[in-house]
Amino acid sequence: MKRIECIIMDWAGTAVDYGCFAPVAAFMESFKAIGVPVTAAETRAHMGLTKIEEIRALFRSERINADFRAKFGRDFNEDDVQARYAEFQRVLFATLEDYTDPIPHVVDTIASLRAAGIKVGSTSGYTRQMMDVVIPAAAKKGYVVDACVTSDNLPAGRPAPYMIYQNMCRLAVPCPQSVLKFGDTIADIREGVNAGAWSVGVITGSNELALTQAEVAAMPADELARRKEEVRMRMYAAGAHYVVDTIAELPALIEAINTRMNA
Figure 1 (cartoon, rainbow, N blue to C red):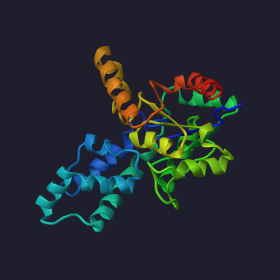
Figure 2 (cartoon, rainbow, N blue to C red):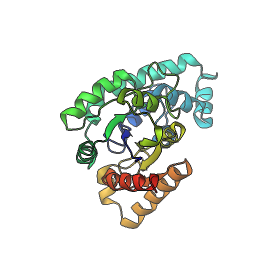
Figure 3 (cartoon, one colour):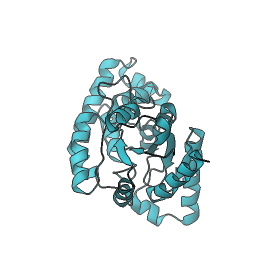
């Protein structure tokens, strides 16, 4: 009987850090330091990539590239990328532990899936050194995974599938069709698709929705529904097999996928 044996969770915006604000703030501070400010929307457009690749993507964007050239009289180079990445890391590490609260429903849903015999892996755009801060801090708050893979020492990060494959090796899961990738960014969706796994997007608390819990609670219902639908459509356009509002829907969805695979 075919079934989902393993879920691969993203971290910021999916499992912890509601709204995925820690990296956004650090990217903005890094570029502000050289007088070439970037917006939250510009940083979120590339979220899910490794952080060094996001720095490169920001520099390559037409608006930021033009602003940099106007300020410094030259094009950016790899030294500029590394300098902004160093500043990004400095800001991020100063605050990272503060952004490790589990998103609502994550702890209890993961516990129920694990009780049903499903293994819990994870991937991240963070480095191993960053995850060495996040993992123990989240564990103290009740969120624990069976494996966490970063792109360190792999050919590439998202949207390439290598981190998922490494999870499969560590957790002894032989078939990608028995794996479900769960994440909040377009890069997460494409990572799952490229791995040949079931790729599922989550809206509430996501980078794509880009709202705090307080903003969600205060927003008129029709406006919130419109924004959620926009996120849903972007995720489906990126190749998602399913998109859910919250992780609480995941156990029922897994049952439906199991039924579908054995029809």
